[in-house]
Each structure stands twice: as C-alpha cells, then as structure tokens.
Amino acid sequence: MGNVSRRLTHVDASGAARMVDIGGKAVTVRTAEAEGRVAMRRETRALIEEQRVAKGDVMQVARIAGIQAAKRTSDLIPLCHPIPLDSVEVDFEFGNEATLRIRARVRATYRTGVEMEALAAAMGAALTVYDMCKSVDRSMILGPFVLVEKTGGRSGVFRRGRGDHA
View 1 (cartoon, rainbow, N blue to C red):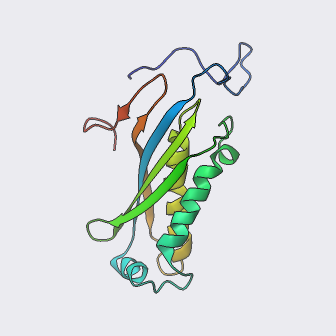
View 2 (view 1 turned 180 degrees about the vertical axis):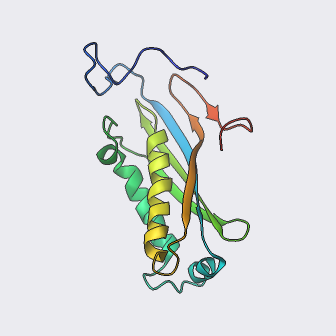
View 3 (view 1 turned 120 degrees about the horizontal axis):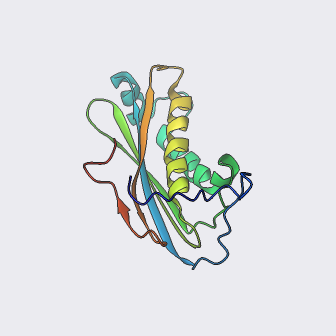
C-alpha cells in the first residue's frame, strides 16, 4: 500500500471533517500530470479531426474546459485548498482506432500538491468532449483517469509504474 498513514488528515479528533492546515508547509514547486481517455466510434473521431462537430472545435473547447476545471478544483472537491496555479496545459492525441488520450499538466509554487487539479483538468476536458459529441455518439466511454506523475512536497516524486493500476 505504500506510504499510507493510519492518521486521517481530513478528520479532527472528534471525527468531524476538516480542511488540513498547510500554513506550516514550505512553499515549493509542485507539478502533476494526469491522463484520461475517451473511447468513441471511428465516425466520431473523424468528425472531431475534421472539425465538423456541430458545437464547434471540440479539442479547443475541451482544452479551455480542462484549464477551467483545474482552476476551479476547490469548488468541486470538498476540503481541497484553492491553489494559485502557475500553469495548466491540456493536450490531446488519438491512439489506436478512436480513443482520445487527454494529458493534463499542472504547475504551482505553493504549500500543497496539484494532483487533484491535474485530474480535474483531464476529467473536465473529457466531459466536454462527451458533451460536444453526445448528439452523434452517446456510447462514448470515459476513463480510466490516472495520476501519471507528481513532484514536489514532502512525499517527493511519484511516477506511475508498470505494476501500478490502469
């Protein structure tokens, strides 16, 4: 299980939910990269690549949605700290057949990590792809979404290995 602590960080002594106090943590550069996938029909892929989806340029709108999702992560996830982000990048690549790979990279100089922001960016982009294409393909499959890498902070570096899930 790795470095799992027995102490619950988001629960106080009485069992009530609490936001972790990060005031004493050092300000360091934190990065995270997350990945997600959207599987779709080949016809849907063609519409996206040819920019023939009725709602517009799917990848550009999804990129903006991913960036916005990263910026608004603390509004989506209870007890998440609002983090001043230095940068958010969202990129897309079609793989075999018609699976769109979404890669989100987030960087901040702050007291806590940006893993949730990277995951939120990938998920926000994927949800937008679905929303923009659902009129032609409601069978799209979203996921899995995974943390690929994170750097900074007390726990150091994490890189997804071959033995990790997904």
